[in-house]
Image 1 (cartoon, rainbow, N blue to C red):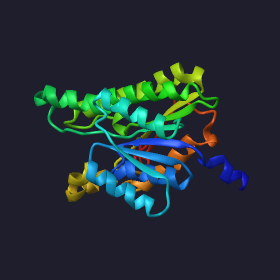
Image 2 (cartoon, helix red, strand yellow):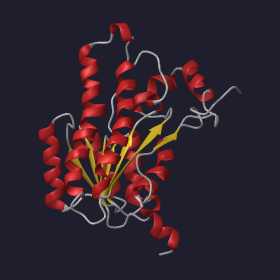
Image 3 (cartoon, rainbow, N blue to C red):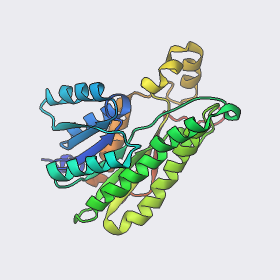
Image 4 (spheres, rainbow, N blue to C red):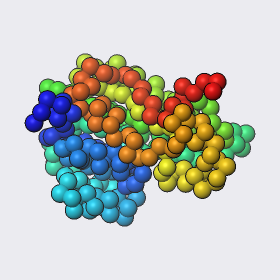
Amino acid sequence: MSYLDSLFSLNGKVAIVTGAARGNGKSISSALLKSGASVILVDVLKNPLISTVKSFQQDNLEAFHFVCDITKKNQILKLKKFVQDNFGKIDILINNAGISISNTSINYSESSWDKTHAVNLKAPFVLSQEFAKLMKHRKHGGVIINITSINAELAFPNNPAYQAFKGGLKQLTKALALDFSEYGIRVNSIGPGYFRTNMTVKSWTNIKKRNQRTDNTILKRWGLPDDLSGAVIFLSSDASSYITGQDIYIDGGWLVKGML
C-alpha cells in the first residue's frame, strides 16, 4: 500500500451512518465502504435500508443494516448494543439523518418544531454521547462528523426549525470537539449546499427554483451525493488527524459568492 493509500485508508474501521437508506447517507456509506470500513447503515425506513445494504453486499462490501428511530433513546441504546456485540468497537459516527418541514414562521406549528429538533439536533447529541462512551476507551479515540447545511450560516425562507437546528448542530460540533478532545475524539461538520436528493425533489422539479439555486453557486450546478465523498473520507481518516471543531462547506461556492 502506498503512502497516499495508507493515509486515507479506513481498513479495519467500523462506522455508523444515520439516514443511510438513500440520498447523501447512502453515498456517504458507499465512500466509507469503498475505503475499507465496515459500515452499519441506520435508518427508520426499513425496506429502502435493506435494499441499499443488499446492493452493497452484492459488491462484497462490509455493509450491515440496523432499523432505528433515532428520536427514541431506547432504540439508540439497542443500536449501541448491536455494535458492541457484533464489532466490539466504533471508530466513526456520521450524524447525517435530517428532516425538513416547511411553513411560514408566523404559522409554524409546535409539532413541526419539535419533530425537527428531535431528528436534527437532539438525536445527533444523544448518538454522539452514547458512542463517545465506546470511543473513549480506545487508544486512538474516534471520529464524529455532523452533517449540517449552508442553512447553518444563511437564512432561508419559510423553514425556521431547519435553520435553527442546523445552526445548533454546527455549534454542538464545536462544543463536542472541545469536550471530547481529552478522549482523542475528533468532531467536525460538513455543510452541504443544494444537493439533488429526495429532500429537494420539489425544488429540482420547479424549473424556476432549480435555476435560482444553480445561479447561486459559483460552479453553476447542484451538488450530487457523491460530491460529499472526498470530505467524508478525509475527515474520517488519519489524513485529518490534527483537525477538529471545524466546519467544511461543500456548496459549489454558494457561501463565498460576492457581487458578481
